[in-house]
Image (cartoon, rainbow, N blue to C red; front, top):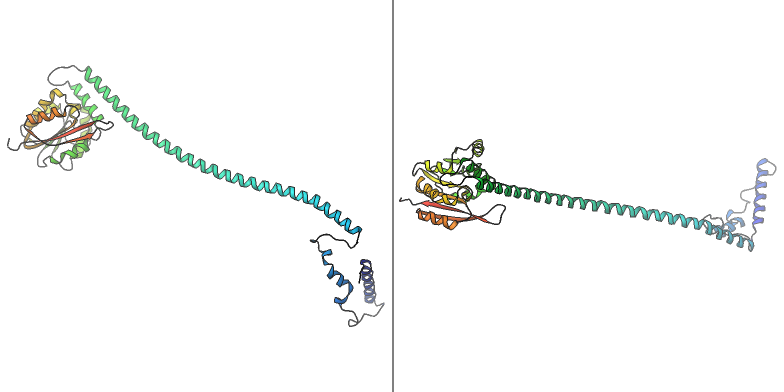
Length: 340
């Protein structure tokens, strides 16, 4: 059975007119039992069979057999051509924007990571530069101090006997500036010093040796020729005598010391004064007393020979790496024989 749209529309109109007349009283109301069932009406059957024609999401169709198909095909092609092109254009733009956003986010994250790494490396390089420059400054200061000490010694008047007071002060201050770590070196060699008597540190500098020995040897006294270094030691609470080293050693009573520490020997005492220094140490020590000679750089064998000639017994000889240099210094521990 072929159903035409025009017939359906005419029938719907007739039903509407009949319903309006019945509602106005022109015709009796229709009996509900006499009406045909809704499911059997041709209009509903047509709608059920051709529901896709009325679905807005379905493909466009026409009830006209020939011309309607051509018109719909044209409409569909035009719609797909125009709207589809616009949709694809804006979709490409949207995808491009999304890709740009992702790229910018990745670039920003990568840039932040590179900046953090660069900052950390810059900090590390700056710290290494600070350490290097600090060590270089110390080395330059040490070289300048050594050069100044050498110029002072060369310009000082030469002659036998005692050194001039200005020269001895200069040597003392230069030795204190160059003798870093002397306290630790002396403490490592001072285990043989007796603890039951007076110990004198000849050339105590700024007090580093006294600080290293104070805890174990209570009867401790220092001798220093530089007035500035003496003031530094006294500020730190040490008993220090301001006198020339050779004069102080000669003025000590015979056999009055349990121990004697001579620090920075090569910087403070000329090699020509070594025999008198060894003899004065032997005279001031009591039998069994111990002397520590620190800071011997050149002529270690000659100094050991002088100790043996003075009847000292060498207890220990220890080499230390000189601070800021590849050369070594020697410390010698010697004991006066108990029977003499």
